[in-house]
Length: 336
Image: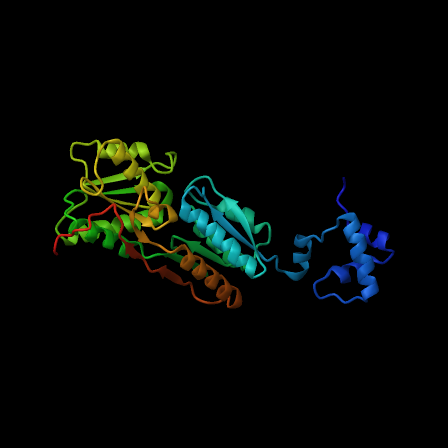
């Protein structure tokens, strides 16, 4: 069936197209009798106003694009849910724009701009300088989640990655771990680098070095189980592991169980994010808490202030992290 048009509604109601437009407009004025006739005709035809067409008149779509990769990571899926909910409370809708790799996301972002979005949140890949300049020229605010770019008008919300990694290093050292490894991944390039750097810096300050540096390929299963098995099967296997996120840490826990290793006696494991999975009884994972609710709040605040004051200088908001100790690290610590 052909979609009903405003002309069809006008003909059925026996009124002008202008009258239908007034009735269906948010601030339009019409008599109760006129409104009843138009709404009855619209309901009978199943007519819905074209929001995108209306936005061309109002110069505002109330759409916010979210450029994001696969949401197999619990943190990412929670971020999507949180942003959608908070935007809905403000009369806005989330336009999900998926990307397939961790490279430049210019094409995906430009595709979202074709829908006249009011703003964009980028939580995957990287933005080139050309894309930054184009967004600035078009007056579209961009908030980066989990990364930072020094460019006018581009705001960032990300974790205190180095601070969290340093807490992990200190706990592993105080737990008596002599060989400390880092398990990262190419899919979180910016956060990955900061978390690894924070761990390495804390170890070096204590006169120590990283024993293993492992990367989980993007094509791997989300926990990198096979990579974890290979790492824990080495003759010089680590007895302490800090992971880029909880999913990678759970992969280490599963590999340890498969190899008959005791956690935390044979190997201590720390994740990052503090997702719901970390507290499950079969994992009880020690992790760095990166609260998704505070991250969403910060992104929404950045968007609202940027839309209200477009000429504000670029801002960076670091979400504070904290250690959550569970059963994957020893309860008894060595005095520092």
